[in-house]
Length: 36
Image 1 (spheres, rainbow, N blue to C red):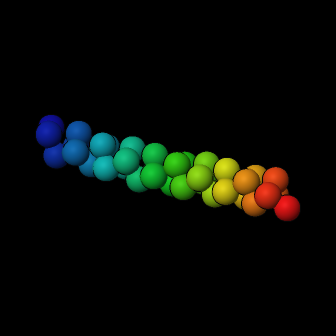
Image 2 (image 1 turned 120 degrees about the horizontal axis):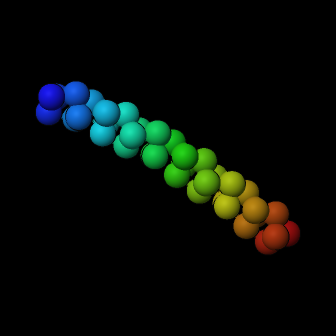
């Protein structure tokens, strides 16, 4: 049981990291566009 919960939490962490990196990249791109 606890092993399954751990695996699920790891999956969620990976998805969250991916989406966070995506948002960070988009904001960085927007900032660069407005800087010019």
